[in-house]
Image (cartoon, rainbow, N blue to C red; front, top):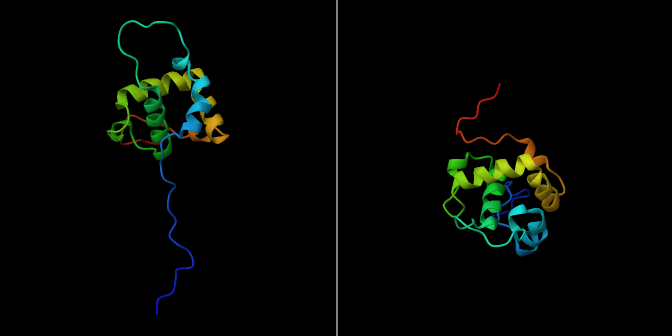
Length: 117
């Protein structure tokens, strides 16, 4: 006799990229999205892809080098993460998307063997 399980196994929430609505909400917070006139030098990065990359790291807690190929190169994402965290942009993004910056309290490391003191 088959009976349905009363409590299905707990699943972690799926990791999704930003929706268009979320993206439009945070665009004004990103200094890279402000029009500074014509640029010279290297082509600019896809900032939406970089934001998705950083959020993936913050959500999973995985090391930077474990980032899936569909995201920005981990070196690029890490550079933006450091810049945005130090300038307060990342906290503003977290508040705009989630109403809290608790995700920034977790340590993020480039190493796969994070050690605690």
